[in-house]
Length: 387
Ligand SMILES: Cc1ncc(COP(=O)(O)O)c(C=O)c1O
Image (cartoon, rainbow, N blue to C red; front, side, top):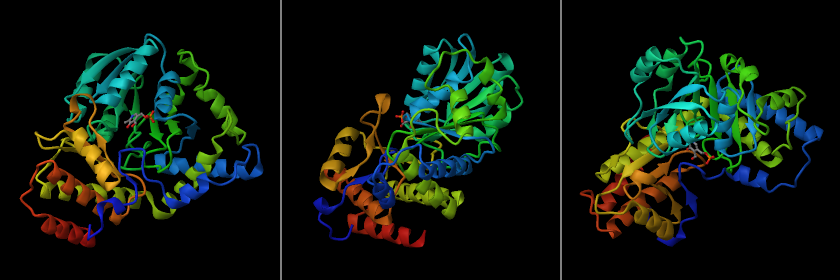
């Protein structure tokens, strides 16, 4: 921010996943390969599986799947549901839409709860729906990444727990590890996280866990499955192995990240992500811009760009001139927003880079904030010093 030539910035990834990697993770990723059937790896696997429970805040086992987050979402469905079952699914953006499509593919009947993009679902509406019909499951994102919205999972959990035949399945791919989401305490029955988000790893792993209520459905679930059959994984994990070849490299990196999280404490991790979200809120206020999400998740901020600016072009300019990758909007939000991720290895110098890049790029595209660049910069430097 201070006198640095724009093109001198190191490349920074501030998308809502994938995210900047910790330098030690990069080091681990380049270590020589070891086999997954070795005492060295057995120890790492056992530690990682145990530590995952700490992030999920559950007494139940957590399973690793070598797939992107969507594989974990599929695992929640195929292990608990049967064709012909009826579910209620929140559709508040791109990822809700996709999970619904997935459920329908398996012959599950879906009642969609369509939410205006940028809004959060009302727990009361879910409560009313449950009174009128028996649902095998409620599906929702914790954070809908396409809009930046955080849904009221705790409240929904309180409601769903009263229905013995209904599971609460939560896609927390952009929420787990970024915002509080204690699985057991909030009565979540199926929870999925993804490696490329708050776990600060490359894409390619998902993590799932099931409550006792969900585990009771495994035996009766009739959706055909092979790779994602959790019963195979449970049997293998009980012998200290994974059923298929283990994702050795990512597991090693995961174990490092989880050990760091354990040392730092979950609350401290949440606070550091919240601080970046708060910094971004301060920054966009100075720029006289607004958040797209009415109820914001700390994991990302979707910023509404000025009407005459194309958000995609703004994003491209920031990338080409400031070596910084943000994400644009999808579908109906395309061109209207840029999405800034707050997860991953982000230092204050990256926040400086973000602030400069956004101001200067907006300026270049014809937007003039009332606060001059120097005053804006000083305000944000002061903010970082005092928060
Ligand atoms: C909320 C949410 N659900 C699902 C996904 C899909 O995950 P993946 O692309 O890893 O399969 C994403 C990815 O960004 C996400 O943010």
